[in-house]
Image (cartoon, rainbow, N blue to C red):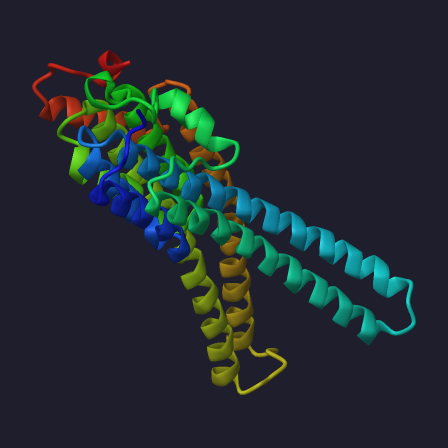
Length: 311
């Protein structure tokens, strides 16, 4: 006999899938749903963890595909303009094609979780393409199990999945912090491993976010410095000493911004690597941040369980 999910289970599953529509902000709901339903409902827990993975990994893939589309259409535009007489018409065609493709990608991204929400509303065992079946095997989830036959999801793999999604979500600027924060608050006391991974991820993502917004602030500050120099010198040619100081200050700030622009993607890559390592079963530690967090946690804990012992 197949397991028939209750109304509460279906509601949590529907909410978890539909949260993808919030584009980043929705990451909070699958973690809450998983924390609330774990050891109550394998069905709801699995659907929440699946929705969490779709938003973390799917958003990352969507961004990468969007970047490829931008690069491809830009190259096409340059080549096309160089070989046509009616540049205006060619540019309009390329812009329409680019916009259509981008909205198409967004539509596909939204379509799958909506389909999942509808399926779960009817109590179906929805699986995302490519990811769903693999995640079910990883967690030891079997929809056909019911009653006394049911065994809970693999706790160790649950924790690794949630924490790895926290690492992957570093590319989701600002909102990606919701995963480690929520998991730490709701489940940190239960698992030293989960507490360590979520806290170090939180500090890592906060650092990347501050670096990003710091670069934006410097960009605005550089513009104001240049405009201020023009105003003080009263010479649009900036040939006065005040104008030259403004130019130098502006160029220095722009150089710092360029460095930040180059560094932030490297941090994103590091976060993706950390997520992969954790998903493979490793207890990954970020350079400097990981060691500091681990040392502090070990000092404050009873020492009955360490991150290494969790593995």
